[in-house]
Image 1: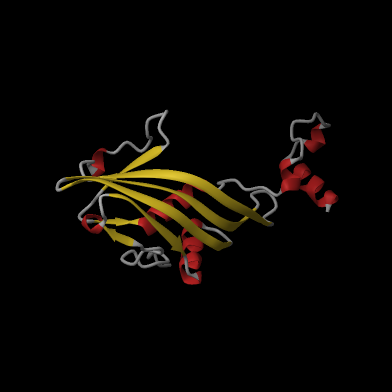
Image 2: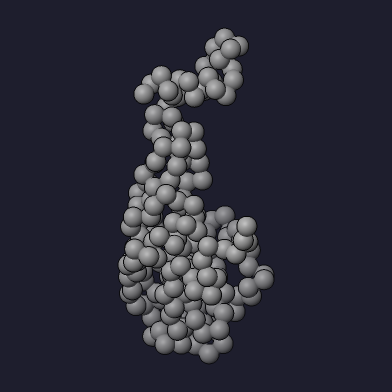
Length: 183
């Protein structure tokens, strides 16, 4: 068995580099549309059955110059994913349509960034490493946060697991039998 990851770590699944110093000061707009191959590789990375659509509309706002550059990326991610239900393993489709905001800061140190932003802040802070920010990896990470870690079919979500029943119904297979009986 090989321990090599399924994708080449040198070539990211979704790569959209932007040269920081080439961005004009002030706002600019960009959009990201993904290819079928990029979506397939991201689906593999995140353990999805399918990633049928993934796109984003972005506004990049650059402030500063020289050693002190800040780029705020605000946008809207849109995606359609398919996962396995954690109870029945049946396919579960989900549409994602979420706004996000990320601040790239040349003065932020990569090893000192707090993984949890301030409680009252919806903006994530990332360091600018070199002269490039990768909007593709940024989008992949936003998608990863939006993926439900425990997807369930709608019918499964409606089952009342707390109802009092005889002792024979208090085993893990009784719940599965209820699901089978419903179909």
